[in-house]
Amino acid sequence: MSAAREHRATNSTDKNRKEIRIMRRRVWILVLAAPIVLAAAQLVRDSRGFTASAAKAPTSGAEVKIDNFSFGPTALTVAAGTTVTWTNRDDIPHTVVSEDKVFKSKVLDTDEKFSFVFTKPGTYGYFCSVHPKMTGKVVVQ
Image 1: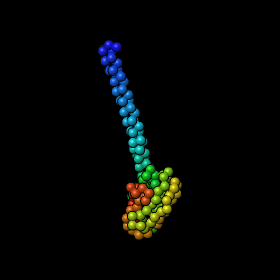
Image 2: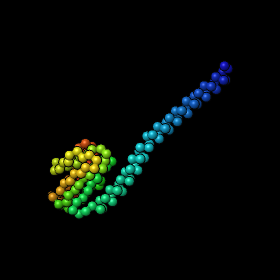
Image 3: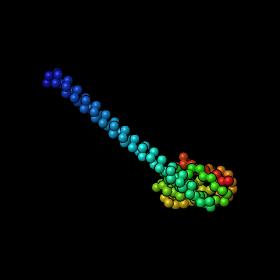
Image 4: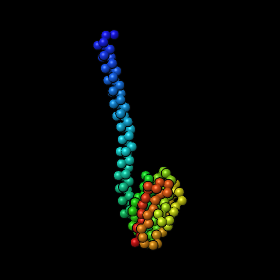
């Protein structure tokens, strides 16, 4: 094989390898970007739903939904004597535990509920003991 042919064959192989690397890189970018875009869309959709459900809450009771590893609404203001009910709408088990140990739920599976009557004014922070980064608060007036 002449030197010119050998040089062209090497260049062609190098070019093919480079194209394959670029194609693989593009596929990885798409694979990694898709879940991020889907999660962002889910957050936008969920935040609209939480606002609407908070506005419809009855005065004798209020509801907090647990979904997509978050409490919604994250902050809830109620009058003393109000019963707050947490409902797990997630596919993953969660708990509701107050920071000052005033209330604590059992592990809630999908569609299970936990309720607590807030009789004293104050701010009650709470979290999920299974996923401690999940937090919320109830302000009782």
